[in-house]
Image (cartoon, rainbow, N blue to C red; front, side, top):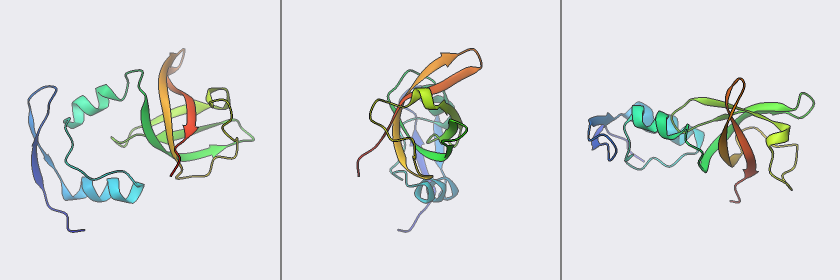
Length: 120
């Protein structure tokens, strides 16, 4: 798919921003949709801290340690613990798996809970 820089307008704050070729390639490499975003990067980061639900990609998860990280669409990462896995979700989640989750505040900052695999 040919990528090109595109202008977009944030539906939240009204700011115009450029959806760059680099950002489109980064999203495609992670397996995210590369459609024109409706939120600017700042509003996207703020939206990713709302309770959700959200979708992301497993960066890594170690079942022996019992924790891992999810890559959010903005590129930020969010921590999750095995206790945050949704009932019925296997503990051997592979890297780069698509997941759905919610955000919950904790003593160490926001973390993902109700983490479950997205069916392909």
